[in-house]
Length: 64
Image 1 (tube, rainbow, N blue to C red):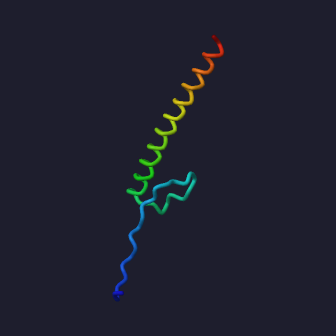
Image 2: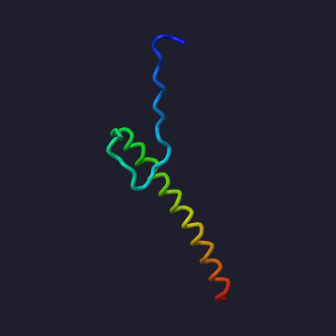
Image 3: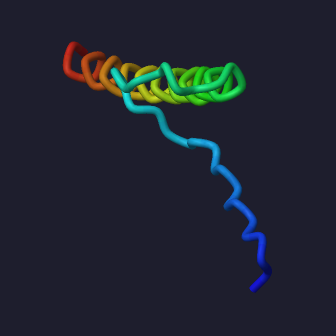
């Protein structure tokens, strides 16, 4: 082991806790969190659309 220990690389968060403390995050970290949340919103909207289409199909079947 060397005399100077290297600092472990700071891992970038891949998750976001709603309501968590944001004051310690850098601008880059905030930008990363925003990107994570925007991706998650798109995923949630796609799932909602898929479920909505299934529900509409089921309702249509029972109305016929």
